[in-house]
Amino acid sequence: MHDDTDKEPAWSLQQSTARYQVDGWGAPYFSIADNGNVAVCPDPEQGVSLDLCELVEHLKARGLALPLLIRFSDIVRHRIKRLNEAFQKAIAEYEYTGIYRGVFPVKVNQQRRLVEEIVEAGRPFAFGLEAGSKPELLIALATMQDVGGLVICNGYKDLKYIETALLAQRFGKTVIVVLERLEELDLVLKASEKTGIRPILGVRSKLSAKGVGRWKASAGDRAKFGLTSAEIVEVADRLAQCEMLDCLQLLHFHIGSQISSIIPIKNAMQEASNIYVELAKMGCKMGYLDVGGGLAIDYDGSKTDFHASKNYTILEYAMDVVSHIGEACSKAGVPHPTLVTESGRAIAAHHSVLVFEVVGENTVRFGKPKEPSPQAHRLLQELYETYQGILPKNVQESWHDASQAKEEAQSLFKYGYLSLRERAQVERLYWNCSEKIAATLRRVRFVPEELHDLEQALSSIYYCNFSLFQSAPDIWAIDQLFPIMPIHRLAEEPTVSARLADLTCDSDGIIDHFIDVEDERRTLDVHPLKSDESYYLGMFLNGAYQEILGDLHNLFGDTNAVHVALSQEERYKIQHVIKGDSIDEVLRYVQYDPEQMVEAVRRQAERAVSAGGLTNQQMRLLMQHYEEALRSYTYLTEE
Ligand SMILES: *Cc1c(COP(=O)(O)O)cnc(C)c1O
View 1 (cartoon, rainbow, N blue to C red):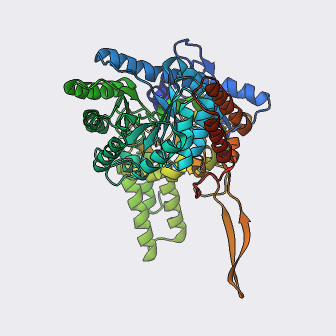
View 2 (spheres, rainbow, N blue to C red):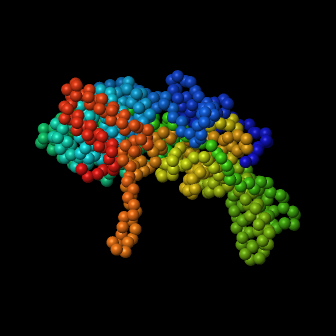
View 3 (cartoon, helix red, strand yellow):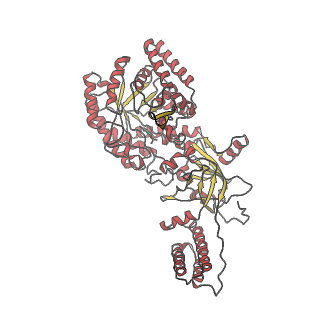
């Protein structure tokens, strides 16, 4: 740690705002306050703001140690409101006669408090939930208790999943089973016959319009989920044969997550609108168009179609969705459907901030070189001149000169024209130049490509008290970018370039990609550490997908494991069997109480029985499925 008592150069809050792109990714929730701390405004309509650094200090004083994930419920509330208002505005603008009802995909953040908050905040808008697996369906059925509440069932389904969904429809909820594979139709027909309940069905279409970026494999003919046009027609034909054409009411597509450009969204809407109209014309009852997720977040604040950004607003998105389907339906004389979105990232990302502390550093400093004596080797004289002449306008040229001098020193040494001491002096001077160049780069807007490595090589490492794998798995898994910045001292110039290392012993536990206006940066600008003061960094926008480690995606838990050893007598023997997680175990992990969930479902079932919606027999079957599912392995098992 070094104490900088030097007088600080003039630096403004505006410069910090620009340096960390705060307005781009943070507005209207995050900004820099006059005292140089990050301010959070969880409800922009009320306009009250909190001092994030002060909040952290208070929490610390109360005994809550860092790293700390801080969730702002009002932000979630505001995101839901904003999304709904955008659709309401688009609906009014285009004189659309259908309504909008979004759903929150539980997989994006399954934490019980959050899902409950979403249901509550979404109530005025009749907002629903989307389940992508059996554990998520159990969550949705226990949490969404509103009469008329919308639950969309996606993902891989077995017979019991479907039976549970059909029975829950009798609670007065709208539970829609979306067929993702043709085989699921047989299961649905079987479940419907067994329970005596007619399903509300959807089909997920494999559009030929593709998304962009990492998730583009979510659409197209070879996508994992969804039906081709031929399969959709087959579903309709088979439903017609069973006189169940009226059951098919929803068309769904999902072209991927974080769709950074509006173009693929327009293309997908065009194609889906045509399919929707055709299905209606074939006699399917229809009534819902579910456009999936994909609504992106501007993680780097650049407002571009770069993968960490997006080039459209929520309102433009809503306008595009509404106008395409509205126009296609009006032209064909088909009633305008209820519009469903499954935006997860756009609702959950902003609300949580991870705050962690820097606990140490590794910094190499070369400092100022001494002027070589007049008798010193020509190379040293030249290199010193290069050092003296480094300016923002000639960094690249100076870099070339310094590199060339170093190479020349190597070859002169090889042929005996330079002593080892002289060679060492040249190399030392080369590093002095590099350091000065790196420092100069911090003042220029555009860093030439070939100097990126230099910047990184000379950067400090700040050791941070957190685990990347635990708190931001996507940085490590898919190189996702999140805005990271100090949450205080922002009135001071950040004069250190650093990479951030976590406390795990894993060499992958380092963050060396950061947001930038153009592309990305390899280092983060931070302040010199002070020996008597904590230094806090915040990682923002990590409320979507980061709270669950990769292996709990969709709440699939630990797998069963066996230890096998070679054995002389029987070729191998099973030494240990370790049972994998059951669903109730993973649900407890995200704060649910399985007993309370059973109670919540039982209460709803009792009510349905009294109202005559559910028979005693159906109730028994439902409770049996529900309780059995809680105890079961999180993966599919044979029936
Ligand atoms: C993951 C997923 C979503 C959520 O996508 P976002 O990009 O987070 O909005 C929605 N629907 C389906 C089917 C998904 O798989």
